Length: 113
Image 1 (cartoon, rainbow, N blue to C red):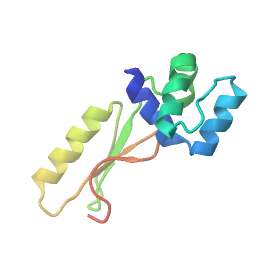
Image 2: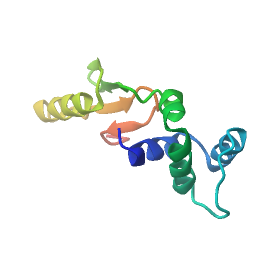
Image 3: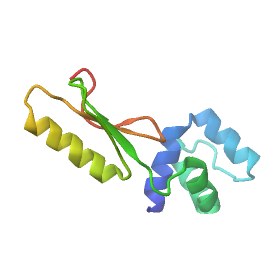
Image 4: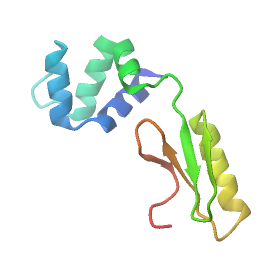
């Protein structure tokens, strides 16, 4: 996983306050007025391996589910996205969604659909 992707995952997983506190606890300096993504990039620069472990980014999985009752776990995010797309295409009444198992955010689909 590229550093920029890791930084984005980190920024998405914490509030700005949590990220500032994390940086302080681990001795990572930041520029005054830095955005959350800029702070996350700085943390990844200095503590890459720890962040990968903290976020469990080695091989994140995802779960695909649909209102029709379909639900399946996948070990890779691309596989989950592909399965959700195929499920939605196969049945016009279905609107499958894929959720990142570790981070909890939707990676495919639309809320309310």
